[in-house]
Image (cartoon, rainbow, N blue to C red):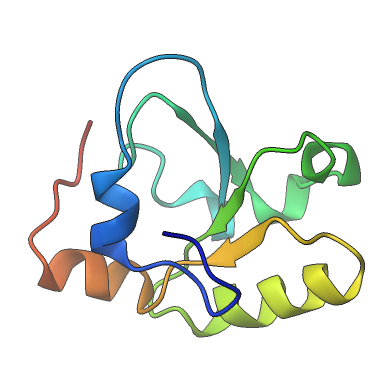
Length: 103
């Protein structure tokens, strides 16, 4: 589901389920707090700490159109964080697929 080029909104949604949080989702200003399910922790990119990236959990990045998420993912991977993925197409792609906006 996750590749170095990112993850699709449909793939991300399909992985949703119940249980403990197993991913960290980063979005500018936590604009999508209600977008994902209870397994994801949404973190404002300005508050992101390096310790959050060392959990071993996937870090999923989502912005409005995927462009900022992709750039941030590339920057984080260049800094040694391999488990970082951008949601391709961002919130717009999510909406085009009519995926739910609330958990």
